[in-house]
Amino acid sequence: MIILKLGGSIITEKGAESPVVNHENMNRIANEIKEAHVKDLIIVHGAGSFGHPFASQYQIGKPLKGELDIHEKKIGFSLIQSWVKKLNGIVCDSLREHGIPAVSIQPSSFIVTRNKRIETANLDLIKDYLDNGFVPVIYGDVVLDRDESIKMAVLSGDQIINYLSKHLIPKRVVLGTDVDGVYTKNPKKHSDARLIEKVTSLSELESLDSTTNIDVTGGMIGKLQELLELASLGIESEIINAGKNNLIENSLKGNKVLGTLITMKESS
Image 1 (tube, rainbow, N blue to C red):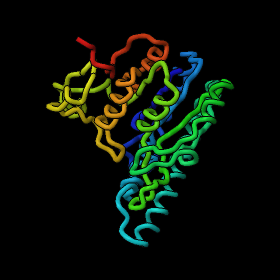
Image 2: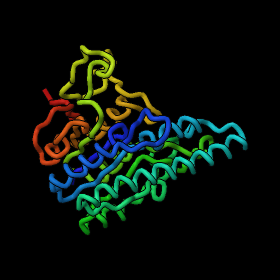
Image 3: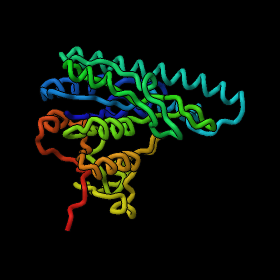
């Protein structure tokens, strides 16, 4: 089994003021997934411009400040849930157009968090779809939270990957982002940024500006925290640039591609 993450910055125009899909990237990636012929595949995608602006606007996950604030957040929650579901529909449509039997799995229908971390999630349906040859497609969403001070939370695709991997134990995890991997500096702002080919702990990065994107779900540091936890369990992952032709296909086939490997520290 392989779990593939498609970042919101790749499949949407993430900096757009309104939700916009990057159809060129989505269609190319769908074709690459088809050509890779992965037997057991789960796809998790980010929300990008379909979720982050609204989550920031309505301050989902921030402490509640009274009944008016609760009502406003409920409206925002409903709005975000609707938009990210629309994006998921577009992603699944693109995959199906390339012959991939994609099925939509809505996180807010089976996941509940406590203090913004997954507390319960019934994975039986995902297992059943895999057993029957489908490709489950899950996504960043808003979910109910059992912490009474917030009640609602943003659930990132990266945290979903962490939870799925701990319970389903995939052979590999691949994250397709809009950069080649983890850098010594933000590569979009610094020409002297250097790609780090392997990361085994956050302490390696303490002196580095490794955050390539700051968003409400944690940016690159958030990704690394989730992936390093998996590495400690023996599940390796790699961060690659899904914006470059054929990298997704080659990575899914098990070929070495440019990127950053997140793995356990070698014992001395």
